[in-house]
Every structure is written in C-alpha cells, then in structure tokens.
Amino acid sequence: MTVVTRVIPCLDVAAGRVVKGVNFLDLRDAGDPVELARRYYEQGADEVTFLDVTATVEDRATMYETVTATAEQVFIPLTVGGGVRSTEDVSRLLAVGADKVGVNSAAIARPELIGEIADRFGAQVLVLSLDIKRSARVPSGFVVTTHGGRTETELDALEWAHEVIRRGAGELLVNSIDADGTKNGYDLELVAAVRELSSVPVIASGGAGALGDFAPAVAAGADAVLAASVFHSGELTVGDVKAALRADGIAVR
Image 1 (cartoon, helix red, strand yellow):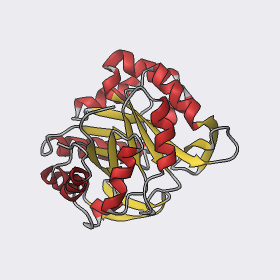
Image 2 (image 1 turned 60 degrees about the vertical axis):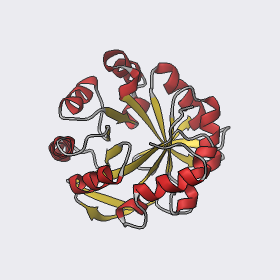
Image 3 (image 1 turned 30 degrees about the vertical axis):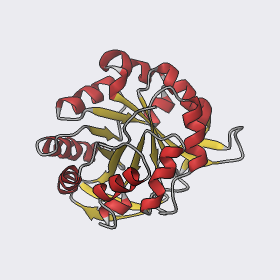
C-alpha cells in the first residue's frame, strides 16, 4: 500500500546487548546495539527496530539508555518494543528518542491499551507486533503467541489483526515464529493473508536468509521487510537488499 518499500534491521536486545536465536530460542550475543544501529544507519536503513526481549523491570533502565544513545547518533525512525504496558511507558520512550513503539502482550491482555495509545499519541506511533505460529486450532491456521512464541493464545491471528486495526494500530509487524531465525524465507502465505485484510502498512518479519527472500515478501503484500540475523552476521548489508529489490523493479529509498 506504500509506494516505497522500507528495509528495517531489527535488534533484539537483552541486558544491553543484541541477541539472536532460532524460533526465539537459544539466544546468543550479536553485539552492541548502538554500534549496530549506527552501522545500519550508515548502510541506508530506513528505520531501526529495537525489541527488548527480556522486558523485565531490571533491564528497563538499560533499554532507555540504549534508545537515548542511539537517537543521538542515528537519524532515522526508531521503533522500540518490549514491556510497553501503558501510555506512560510510551511517553517515556518517546521522550528519550523513540519515534514509534511496538506493543504485543500488553495489548492482548488489555486491548483497550491500543486505543489509549492511538488517541494520546496518534496511530502513526503505534506498531502492533504480532508473533504468529501456524496452528490447526484456529480457523485461519495462524494463532497469536506471547512470551517469544512459547505461549499460544486462543486468538486467531487474522481476527486479532483486524481488531487491532479497528482499535487504532498504525502498523502491523507480522513476525512468523516458525520462520524466525531459520533463514528459509518469509512466510509468504501469512504475509498475504494479513495484507488482504489490512488497511495499514504491513511489516514482514521472520525468515530472511538470502537476497532472493525479500522481493517475494513485497510481492506478497509487505510494505516493509524486517531482518536481523543476515545483517548482524554481515552476510548481507542493507545496501545489498535495496539493490536486489531495485533489480526486481521494487522502489526503495
């Protein structure tokens, strides 16, 4: 639905360090978040997303410091998610340099939070993060999960996506837990299913492993492509991805 496709590196942060695993398990150290964010900014990233994967009270101060330090050096939009439970959490993150916030578990626990954030700060600030697994238990075949994919809810992912848009979400971050970290490509069926119902931008996440993985996600309906492992390892740069997208006739910045 957008003319220009965005390329977004994602940094999963725990205790002040970037970590990465497979299917949200077996997390390993991947570097300093501020250094990595600056590297991706210099490579031409359109945005950077931070996800505090532990989101515990004791790590919260570290995350605020990380966002502040990054915002001083990186001049593209920063999205920060993990542990956002109230409009006051959003206010504080915006105050230290975040441009958008990602919300997941707290919105599932109390859906009214979506409208509260959208009403106070504008829908453009709110990225609703959807951690989705394939499951035969729900009509669409896709179920919403929490706790890094470990806990399945009773929510059909497509029904939930429709509801969060109605309540005021400005973007959907569609993360396939099944594909996460596998480098086997995005879940194109999932991306297409969300795109079909969504009136807001859709960010594809989970599974990018090669240059050939990105264009199909855009063809399936993604407005932005998010990746982590291939960037952290140095296998690909943001510039590599943008060049590949251009070669496929996809407009990028």
